[in-house]
Amino acid sequence: MIRLTEQEFYDIVSYVKATYGIDLSKKKQLIESRMYPILFERNLDNFTDYFNLVRGRNSAEITVMLNRLTTNHTYFMREPTHFEFLKNNLLPVWKKEKKEKVLRIWSAGCSSGEEAYTAIMVLKDYFGFQKWDYRILATDISARVIENAQNSVYSKDALQNIPKLWVNKYFIKKGDDQYILSEDVKKEVIFKYFNLMESFIFKNKFDLIFCRNVMIYFDQPTKKALIQKFYNVLNPGGYLFIGHSETIQNGSTDFKYIKPSIYHKE
Image 1 (cartoon, rainbow, N blue to C red):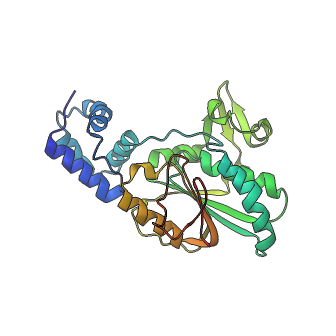
Image 2: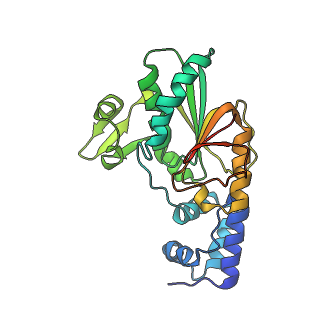
Image 3: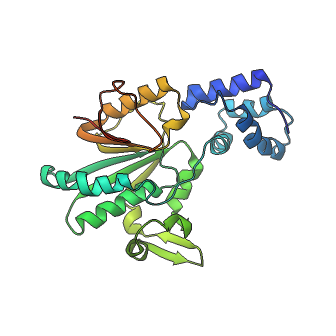
């Protein structure tokens, strides 16, 4: 096992924090264990040489590093109370109030697409053949998971929490343990690489933002600044969904607390 020197540890923590907002200041052992196989594959005997590749803006190495240091595990209908709240509380109101019949949703930190695709299936199930214009922007800092999301091939385990009716309606079985998502769902999601530390410049504001199990990697000042940016790009009356294990400190933002992990812009 190759060990990080204190200077190497400081360099990688500082770079990742400044560039991506991710706080690794207490993750020295994680960095060593997850990055060692990469150094071995590259025939490198120290972290400095590898970090020089990353700092040289080698996009392939940046993607490898981020994939190693963050967790991309997800599945369809994860934390289902959010999708139930969307269906039972938000969609009936929007159906009455939105005369233009347009909805804009952002899945921030979309990983391999299950969250965004689940939301589209909820919308399709609710609106049926009614003519609504709904699109989801799905973004992530990992080019690899975006590619996986666009390919939209999933294991049987990833589908275990969604209704069997949806599996039959929206997926095509491929082999014993793989399912391909239908184009009818895929066409409603736009995937893009996006770093949440960048400025938010969007043509239209959003009605709902999912940012679930992403801010666990951020320190409090970074999280507070990000939450305010989400607030600024939501329409009045819009909502923010965060992960069930995440919290927003009372009084630290302009959002109104609705229930655990659900916040409202009045």
